[in-house]
Length: 250
View 1 (cartoon, one colour):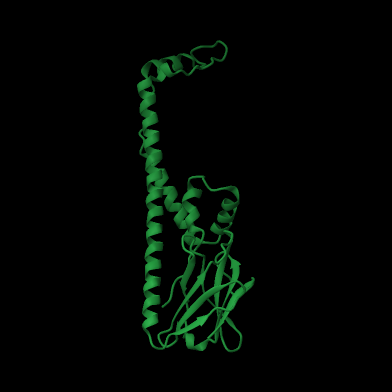
View 2 (tube, rainbow, N blue to C red):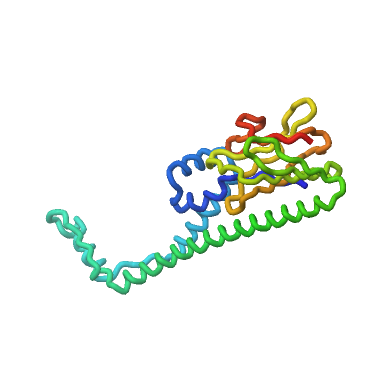
């Protein structure tokens, strides 16, 4: 089984599009957007929706009486001192003002509903992924050749289910510390010569006490003798650069 690495910045894009992201997270996301085409496309899709909703509000012409008063105050008509405009509720009419406020409120509600739907879709995708991972674990436990290996690390509890013939590995870790937004955990497959190959990145499940993740491998797991996890910058690294959390020998 394989899995695609997850971009941790995607969940901040809706809030960023609405201007609701705090300054530190905004700076991190803006730096990430300079080099990530997929996140740029995601941000553009949110902005296009907002622009279409804004354009849906029809322009409202001013009342005829107000138009005449404004025309009378133009420099070519009245050569006195520059007139001062006085805008009052009576000039527009309470009905017109109420209609404008209702349209603006409807626009905001539509935007909020759109982002809530996107958030629910994201939660459903996470739930589907968790169900799939649990089913994989149950299936692996029925394989007679599945290895169950305990983790080696200070304060880390977990197991690795490994089935080399089917090229499937599932890592389950309990109570992994949460990381800042600019960091992630990265899996490294270790070959007999000590070389490291990325096995994917992951972040702890905030709603669950444990984290289960499939190990991503382009080659055969039989070619490796161990596995390690380190802390790396968001998006992952080409080689280990951060602190090693634990190691597993096959």
